[in-house]
Amino acid sequence: MQNKDLKPMLAKHAREIIQMLIQQNIHFSVQCNREKVHFDPELPEEITKQFHPIIDFILAGFTFESIEIWQDDMSFEAGFGKDNFPSLVVIPFTSIIQIAIPTDNSVIRDVCVFMNAMNILELNIFGQDQDTKQLKQDSHTETTNIKSEEEALLESSKHAILSNPNNKF
Image (cartoon, rainbow, N blue to C red; front, side):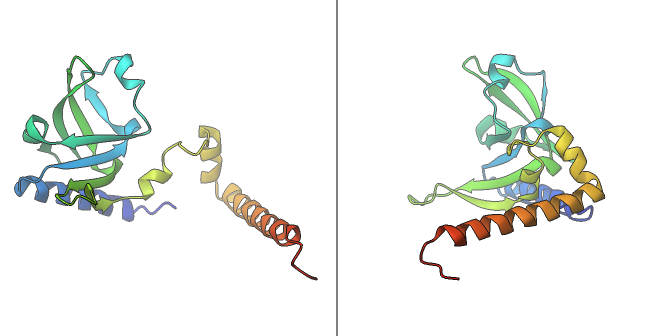
């Protein structure tokens, strides 16, 4: 699903929520698409190889105090790895998947205050390669894929019905 109007709206909403949390001095965590996060200086490979496609930053203490908000992204200073390697982290608002705040509740550790599930669709965590992604952008291929998916679902449903000996025809 690609909606050119929805993406900027969600990015603006993420920025507004983060601004409000900063104004109210509420620490928070942010999850985002690792591929879109920038580090200055770049982190050593022994640190980055441990990152997953979705990266989680907890903004508290010095990291929280160093947050700067720009039009399209936010930045903060953080330390990484066992040696606390310093780097400036820049996160585009368009890459944010979730914003959560900690609670005092013993049952729920954090509460999600923002979610952009559309950003999860952009991640390559479901085994799609770049060629497949490019083909899906082609409208003809999109139509073909939808038909193939429908056929696969029908076949799966048919198999489920036929595999149950209690179903009578």
